[in-house]
Amino acid sequence: MDKQPTGNFVAFINRDKQPGDKRPMFQGRLAQPGQESEHPFTLWAHEFTDSKRVK
Image (cartoon, rainbow, N blue to C red; front, top):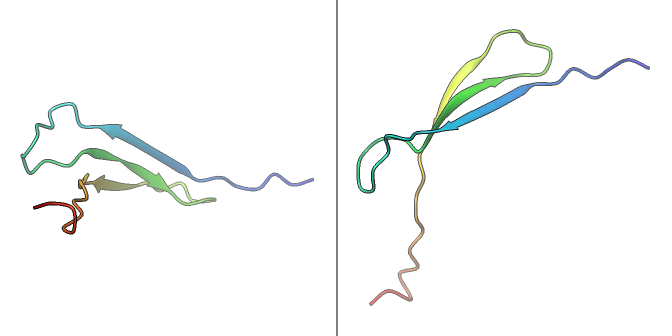
């Protein structure tokens, strides 16, 4: 049985992130299955506020 190629998804929390600043919450790297190259990515956190409940 052949082994299916796997990708790679690694994310690290940004410990320098402070509430209200413009820094991303996570940074990491992504590799597609069967590919050697990795691609950097950045994720920002967003707190959802329901406008119907906020007055």
